[in-house]
Length: 491
Image (cartoon, rainbow, N blue to C red; front, side, top):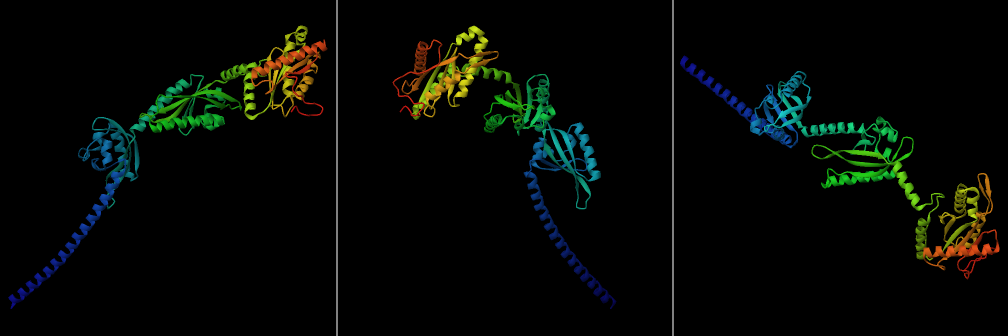
C-alpha cells in the first residue's frame, strides 16, 4: 500500500511540474514575442534616427567613455576624410592634433561631471590625406535607459573655409588700414548691405565726421539722393554679374559722387570701388577709395562756363549765342512761331575808356548787362558779342512786340550810369532789329541783318544828331510796324 501511495504522490508531483513547465513556456513565449516587438520598434526607431542623421550636413558621432568611436553618419566620414570601415573603432586622439586632444579631454570630463552640453571651438583634425581641417564640436553626454552615462555624442561642423576667409579678411583689413592711415584719400569698406565697416582717419578731413561717427553711417547718410541712386545701381549691376558668374574679380568701377560734409556743404568726389573676396572668390565686402575733386570740378565747371559765357559780364558769349539762336529758330520753324534778333552797340563808349580808364569801361559794360537782363523776360536770351556790342534773342515776340521791347531797352540803357565817383549820362544804344521768318531763316543771316540795321540807324542818327543819340532801326523798312500808341499788330 505504501508503494502505491508513493507512486501516486510521485505522479502528482510530475503533473504539477508539467503544469509549472507549461506556464513557464507560456511566459517565455510571451517574453519572446514582447522582445521581438521591442526589437522591431527599436529597429524602426533606429532606421528613422539613422535616416535623420544621414540627412544633416554636419558630422554626427558617438564615442564610448574610453573615447572610441562607436557610431557616426556619412557626413562625419566626409569631415574626417576616412571611409566608414576606417573610422569605426578609432579613438578620437588618433586623428586630432595634441592641443585638440587635450581640449577635448577636458571638455568631455566637464560634460561627464556636469551633464551639460559644451562647445569646442577651433578643433584641428588631420584627415587621412594629411590635410588639416578646423571643426566646431558640440558635445553632450550619452546615457543608457537607466540614466547611467555610457559615452558622448557630438555634432561636428567643418569651419575651415570660414576660418580661412576670416583670416584673409583680417589680413586684407590690416594691409588696407596701413595704407589708409598713410594716404590723403579716404578708404572705406562697406558691407554688402551698404553699412560702413571701416574708415581711414582721413575721413574727418574730407567729410568732417570722426571715424567712430562714420562707422554708424550708411551710404544714404553720406550721399546726395542722385549719387545714392547712382551708387546703388552700380553695386546692384556688379552683384548681378557675380550672380551670373560673368564678373571679373579684378574689375573696379569709378563714379563721380556728391557727398555731404558734416557742415552741410556738398563735396564732389571721385570714388572707385571693388569687391573684397573670401578664399573662394565670393564677395564679402565693398572697398571704396574716395578722392576729393571739388577743386578740379570747380575748375572744369569754370572752364565750361568760360567756354559759353563772357567772363566780364557773365552773359552768354558769341559761340553760345549762336547755338541758342539755332535752337530757338529750329523750335520756331517746328511750331510756326516768330523770333526777333536785336544787335546793340553803345554810342560814345570809347570816351568812357579814354576819360576814366578801362576799369570804368568794364564797370559800365557790367551794368549794361544787368539792365538788359532786368528789362527782358527769362525766356529771352542776352549775350555780349564783344567790346561794347550786345545781342538779344526775343523769343515769341507775339507776346512782347519787338518795337516795344526795343523802345524799353533804349530808354533803360540811356539812363545815367553811376560808377563809383563818376556819373556818366551820355551813353545811348543803337539797336538794329531783324525778324524771323521775314528777314531770314538762318541765325547768321539774322545777326548780319540786325547788325546792318543797327549801323544804318547809327548813321542816320549821327546825321541828325551830332551828339550820337540812341536809335532803333529794323532791317526791312517795308514791313508793317506796330503802332505803340494803339497797340495794333503788324499783321
